[in-house]
Image 1 (cartoon, rainbow, N blue to C red):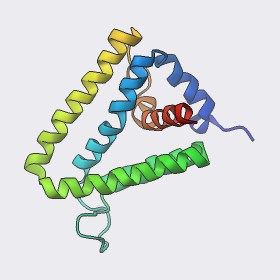
Image 2 (cartoon, rainbow, N blue to C red):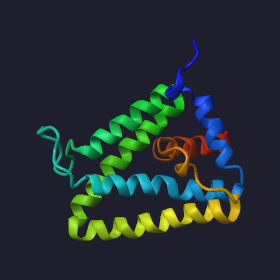
Image 3 (cartoon, rainbow, N blue to C red):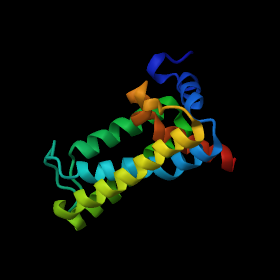
Image 4 (tube, rainbow, N blue to C red):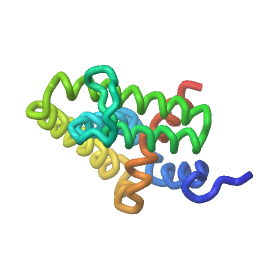
Length: 162
């Protein structure tokens, strides 16, 4: 049975590939995409709880958890094997990001996150401008840029290792 629209992995991968053909740019993305997701989850730690459940001391079912569930579930729907690995990485980022955010506190965490986000996004834009010589996908498709990028970076790693 063919996948429809949002869950069509081949369609998404073709779109991604059109923006990421230069090996240096691909490598830059492999370095910076997951840290962008991780640091976003660090900031989302400070959002209010959506459910008041008793979890280990720094895990809160908040927007960081919600985004993690959405990302992980979407990746599993795209591809069971690679999506399961990506989903586990998302949950690892949420748990470790929660512990880091709890340890740093908001007053330091936002500064660390800001520095990391600026550094990583600058690297991404340099990769596209200098090496790819093309605007990044986020200018054409925000969902592709934010939702799909971590999954495709993982697929790049799996393809290179396999």
